Image 1 (cartoon, rainbow, N blue to C red):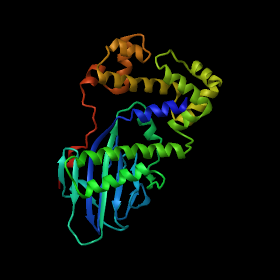
Image 2 (image 1 turned 180 degrees about the vertical axis):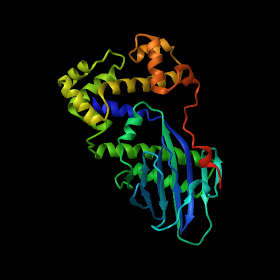
Image 3 (image 1 turned 135 degrees about the horizontal axis):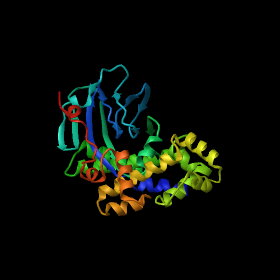
Image 4 (image 1 turned 60 degrees about the vertical axis):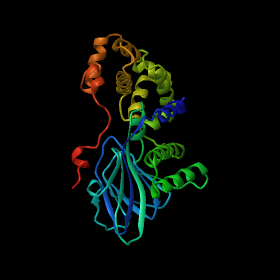
Length: 317
């Protein structure tokens, strides 16, 4: 059942672009990106070479490489170590749309071209999947993937010779490559902790699959342990060790994430949503929702829950 849960997470990524920037910069150069919690930042190099520093780790990138900073950590990208970086939003830029910019600097040095962006997610389970990713994820140009090479070539061409719709083409193709990068990591990595590790664990995976299939059922620690084929105490200990949270804490958290999505969609009554996430009383559901999200379901539905880069970060120098 584990692949079904991960497949749904990938299919429901709900990726939303916070910003995209296409840069053409001459050596020497350096760019500092601020922390952007709640986003995944990516860099796609289409020409030249660069090094990226994230939390003390240095990664060299070359044309065709895609580097992800999954947790929105502040970092720097330079043409060579030792450069003094300029804050990203202090660089002169031309706004193509409210979320798409071009940065082109004069100079005679060797030029580097790259597409950078920050995306946020609304899909159920995606936050847990992203938390399972490492601080830095590098995906090289895949010699065996014709479509991936084609996507990179189109992005490079659109970046160098913009035409009407280039911003949309570049952003959408970059989004596809981000999903492919996550999928490649899932296919090549065997984590021992976190959500993905729990789904792949033979015992925990059975319990998680059963819960995900029927989140409204009246689950208890005993019933989940029974699905896992473990004793109550062994299941509880294993779940906490692998997943980093208690089993019933996970049940509540997942239900409240599902409830938040249903509340945002505004297609069901609150009493129906309460039933869908396992609450027999609308009052009990309202109390649980407020504990989880800090506001009532009605107030949550009225909020703008889209991630925005803080105005003080975007403001030009």
